[in-house]
Image 1 (cartoon, rainbow, N blue to C red):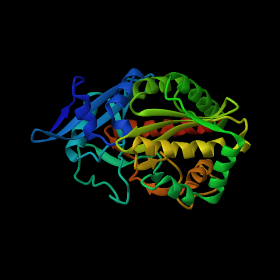
Image 2: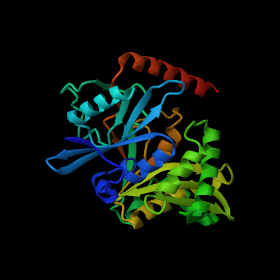
Image 3: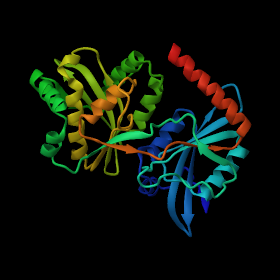
Length: 334
């Protein structure tokens, strides 16, 4: 049985069911404050809540239509897909993008052949990368450091020797420093993500619970900063920013090492680097730099089952994909 979860539902009961920050109650509340519609569904067996699914719905400019997004949930059952299909038809939703938090080594491909009321197909425009890198934090600090690539260890020691200092500043002042570095990096790398208001709303809702800020300083000048998430014994690195100043003293290498130690201190047994290219990647790819950087910490490459679209209106879906592709080309040429 599928039910819509009301806003007065127990936050603790809800969060006890989920396994990823993007499915937490706090994330949903933040998304509401950014102006999008949020839907929480509960899947019940008898009277027991067994799964929850938190979706956001986004208006397409200058139309009455929307698209949906279900990030990092468990795999939705046929009952959930059928509920979402009916809901979408009633609410002018063209399709829902589904990106489960499931590794490909555990399920080779989702079983959608049970014929939900709308077609599920591989997404042409994934939002999450198919690959990430994961570090086992159950090892001691000595074991971790010993297993890093030799160049990574050298860069960490160089930063320490030069006097780079790492501070946890999980407060509003720390967020301001992080935000400045993050958006400088976005501009430099021509990354078109969310705006400062969005990130401030996310921070305000996740601080003191999920989100942490680490900053690397040299002579009191902030050189690199990470916003990190901790949830249910797992640490995540979703956002980072760097300065062009003093890059030769390798502040980012020391910052990542201190992030690893912070994850261990918080109780995490795994550190998910959020996204990267896959193994045997093309070194000319724009993502190769940060993929190689993460690889230096002796991470394991992990592949997810991918991105899928629950298509409710096939004709409008094709139009949407055509416009989306054109927009991506335009942004790359700017």
